[in-house]
Image (cartoon, rainbow, N blue to C red; front, side, top):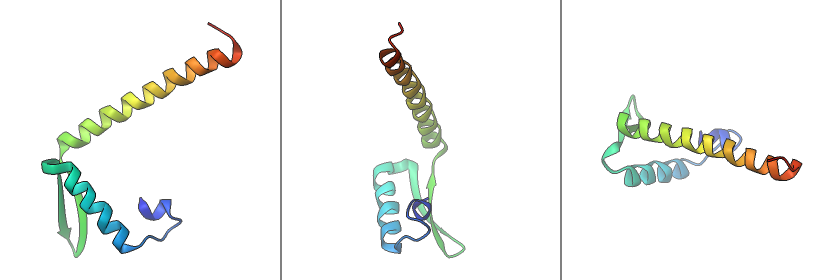
Amino acid sequence: MLAAKEDGSVHTETVSRVMEFLDRVGEDDVELVKRRGTRRVVFSARLVERLRRLGTQSQTAGVDSARENRSVVIGST
């Protein structure tokens, strides 16, 4: 994901810092593992579900906010 954001290239140090940050912030719900010679971040099912719910809530909030803004722009109620 970082490479996609940075047009295909990202420094390995940046990736390491992001992985360590996620591990630190995620506490028991995030684990750094090494598989087939590659370091990976593993998220617990509990954290994934929580993030999914938060994403759904923020998308819904964005739709509600967009509707409110639309009403202001076009003068509808």
